[in-house]
Length: 252
Image (cartoon, rainbow, N blue to C red):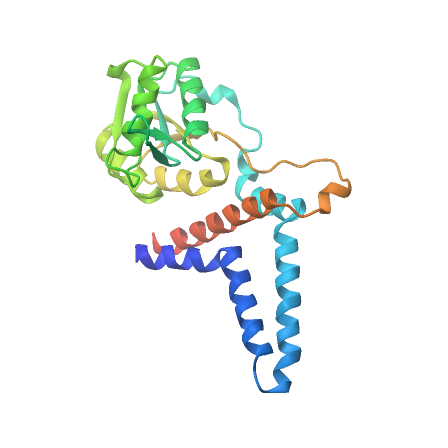
């Protein structure tokens, strides 16, 4: 079922959809049936409209808002009396020069935010979670970086086995025996809704502390409606996460 979910997410990706529409329109244009030509042009127009809509700020902001609306005004008072700060991996990579696994993608942002929260709170545990695709787990890479930045080894807990959001929560529930402890959950804003729902299945007091928000309303101008690759990326990430939320609500 996990692979079915991954395939479904890949097929919903805007770039994949645009390529499928484009390929379909080419097939229709090369068809011997003249009646198919109008449908081919409609497909081409659909490609242009879809690509434009996903590449402008109003669309990417709307999709981000759907996921992040509950976390736009984080209350720092939530960090008081935290017992554990949990940071979920956002990826890692192997440095070919030093042959060391280092946090990458969104992990540095999440890790930095988690470090700040840990240092400002009275939390006892700094928890790094996630397997990743390298020999060294993402959790270990984050923990190593946290140690270099001053977090004591005795405070760090590593959860190196989870491969997705559901497993993050399940694996940590086996490591953290006190289900009443107050946990500060660190992940990207768009990913918080799904993560929070999973963690609250196991722990009674989980505080959402997003490391960053994609939703960023700006004053209306000519640039608001100019397409760019950054907005296309934001839309793609948001659509993928929305699909993830729907799948988790049905499957789990």
